[in-house]
Amino acid sequence: MFRQAKKEGVFREDLDPDLFFLILTTAIQGIMNPQVLSQQPFSAEEAFKGIFRILYEGAFTQEARKRFQLNN
Image (cartoon, rainbow, N blue to C red):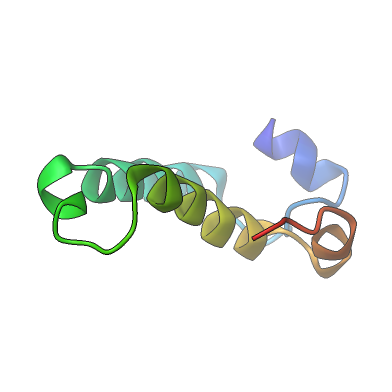
């Protein structure tokens, strides 16, 4: 799916899919930890959405950001 998105111009060409998914899984495992979440002012849902928003918007091309503008 990641490679297809790159091919279609949704994701930036310079991104390594293996590194992207390593960052994604590490962020989810680290932040979604109940001990970590209990010390934060945001909910698990907000954290999960935030992780995806930060990573995917960063992976989008400029054109894709406009096309897939995410709601806050």
